[in-house]
Length: 241
Image 1 (cartoon, rainbow, N blue to C red):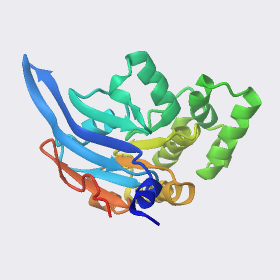
Image 2: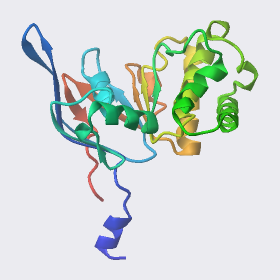
Image 3: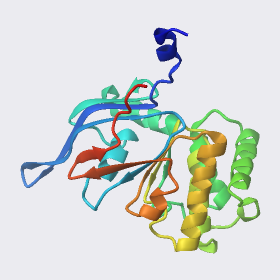
């Protein structure tokens, strides 16, 4: 096999970031949050973004997920330069491509577990029967088949986070982003949730980017990146073999 054939056989990064910078306005002044971030994340990676509070790791996650926009640099996800999308197109892109898992679950308290997981599917063209089948399959995958009709206040913290995981994966997104997904859980529940994310990555090939300050949580990821004072201090673009 020639060198060109080897290069063409190498999968393209799912997330490709070049010289990304972001700042926020505070009291009329620009406060830098991220500076010159260059990073590749490959399909099927389970990446932990680590760093102290205020390091910029959650800002980087929000940029990758299309929640916020950078000041400069390029950011391609699945071959799409999301920095060029307007707000409406960006919202549509997020709904189709990104599954979100938050620290505090963000479940609707007046909806059952089934209804919370079904929410993202309401924006699709699936029929009611197709949505039902998809939700039941997904809740079964996170071991909550017997809790479908329970409301969030009837579930433990770990169970609520598993509902949130089901909601994040029910649309079969390109990318799953998790911001401190175990920050509100005890150690046993946290280990359960992290093991579930690990299985989604290993068995279903899901690409996951997780922000965490917990080294024990980061150990579940296959790759750890460290952000400090707005810069990636290790683990940036992978060199070509």
